[in-house]
Amino acid sequence: MSWPDIATIAKNVLAGKTTAIESVEQALKSIDEQKEFSAIITTTTERARQRAKSIDEAVARGENPGRLAGVPFIAKDNFLTFGSETTAASNILKGFNAPYQSTAIEKLEAEGAICVAKANLDAFAHGASTENSDYMTTKNPHDSTRVPGGSSGGSAVSVVLGLAPFAVGTDTGGSIRQPASFTGAVGFKPTYGLVSRSGVIAMASSTDTIGPLTTNVEDAALVLDVMSGQDPLDSTTIKRDETSYTILETPVKGAKLGVVKEYMEGLDPKIKALIIKQVENLKRAGAEVSEISLPSLPLALACYYIICPAEVSSNLSRYDGQHFGRHTPDAKDLETSYSQTRNQGFGSEAKRRIMIGTYVLSSGYYDAYYKKAQQLRTKLINEFTEAFNKYDFLVGPTAPTTAFKIGENAAEPLKMYLQDIMTVAANLVGIPAISIPAGKIDGLPVGLQIMAAQRHDRQLLAFAKKTEELSNE
Amino acid sequence: MSKLTRQDILKLAKLSRLQLTDAEVKQLEIEIGSILKYVEQLQSVNLDGIEPTYQVTGLKDVTRADKVIDYQANPTDLLKNAPVTEKSHFKVKRMVN
Image 1 (cartoon, each protein chain N blue to C red):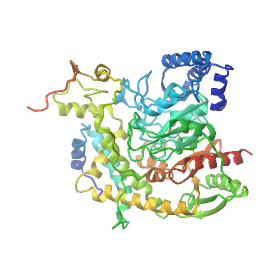
Image 2: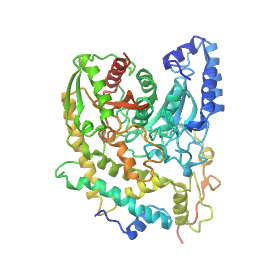
Image 3: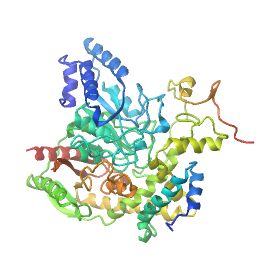
Image 4: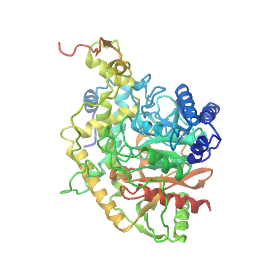
């Protein structure tokens, strides 16, 4: 089932050509009909219908419910939302009903969007396949024996299957972009701090970002425009661009494009050919293309897998079974209650990350691991800053492979981590990055990744839109 | 540095408040070892004199006015997810003997 672009849906609702309730029912029907892909954990049916009714009534009264009037969407289940449980796909949060909503969801609702369901993910967003979900593994729509990528796999599959016109996800090390690449969606990771993290279950706070998954760049820009901006509830948020993120004008002619050497070397030749084809399109349209080397890039993944578990171990310490979530009533004392609750409630990947994080932060190892990783982060930032002095955009593949088989990497955590090798740098450096479809190999999608300097989200979206247009010609 | 012993794993588990099973301890010994071996690539890089980065967008000491903000949340709602409560409090097992 396919949807018109988001702006058109809202326009049609306002003009009375369609209603919010029709769109909500269409989304709920699609979700029900395509259950075999296991993209959805829960629907928020009752609340969605109520919201649709009130939006339709507002339109009937001649009011304007907003730029996303009556547009259904699906939220990754690590966004706190009303209308259903919020679990982060973990057993430890099973049955948790959020007492407040995340700022991103509030902003979408304030413009008339309607959350219809919560999407599957790797529990607590730890993973690159959704296989780490404590509930189910989401299947790739292009081949159901393969993973959709992760951790926002359920969100990516939702938009590709047309369960809703857009979905929102989180990207801490590639969790929006890599599933977008594996499923043929558009996935956008904004500049760090552009979208408030308030009410989104924390993973690695210094790299956590929130962004849209859509079927086209224009929709991603509109959703970003609604969600972005400073929030008193998240002190790391930054001022948004005063210009709307939906003004997507940028000349390709004369744009300076750097092809990242470290991402292209040793790359699967079939993926490489598709990336080069996209670059050639841009070159023909007048972009000035050359190769760029960022020497510290090969170390970015090692850096990330120190910083990320360190922050994860800290953020997951709040799950102690006393205030909310899973509880162990029969434990003999408080200490045992903590340890039993946590061991029963966390899956194996969360435990691994907690243990590694605890190790790299422990006295005696802090300087050798954590501090060193933060120093390398500075080096990476310097190399990217220098690159953006010369180039407007950097390009390469989003992921080193196409979608892999379910179970293929599950037994070896390190192999799963290597999926993030091309995406983590943008998180460590805080820059915006997007994955857009670049073609298919044996029926499986490949994503092109484009990166820009911090706070150049609008320029990046505009350039991605041009790339998308050239690719469709 | 990366070779973690069973004792190391047990100590980390205790610090992490995880009551691991025997099988998990064995598994984690292998997995954490291989992950640490990978991240130890950083040890060979000379990063002397480079300042660590903890915040990427240059924000510093973000403050707000010390005022009460009404979020319209009431204690009953906030306690709804708690496993054990008494009156308007969380109830936990005894901490100090």
